[in-house]
Every structure is written in structure tokens, then in C-alpha cells.
Length: 90
Image (tube, rainbow, N blue to C red; front, side, top):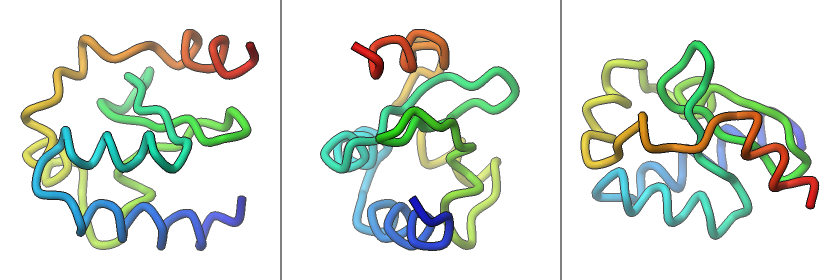
């Protein structure tokens, strides 16, 4: 997955969403899994199991703005990176 293409695709999903829950649903449709990162609140695991900071994959957004947008998502309830990768392997 080319990083620039991924950023463009995820930015498009973000801009098409009205809430964090809607954004997560769109990410899931595209094969991304939202997870709780070790250092970042929100990360995604791509279709081949690579971890990405979600804020770095959305053009023109910073971590604080992403947190504000995702207020309807409880980051503590998200799966860990390890569990998401394990489920991707099965």
C-alpha cells in the first residue's frame, strides 16, 4: 500500500464522515481496523497488518482535532494493536 495513496483515501473517508462512528464504519468497509495504539490514541491496522497513526494518515489534521472529532469513540474500549494483528492473521 503506497503511503500517499493511503493518506488520500483515508482523508476522503474522514471528510465524508459526520461523526467518529461513521468514520470508523467507513474505515472498516475499506479493510482498516481502528485500534488503540501504544503511543497514539487512535491507530489503524491496514489490510496487510501494518500499524499506522490515524492522525498521520489524514491530510490537514492534528492529534487534538482528531480527538475532538472522535469524541463518540471510546479509545479505551478499542482492541489493542496486538489483538488486531492476531485477528488479521486468522
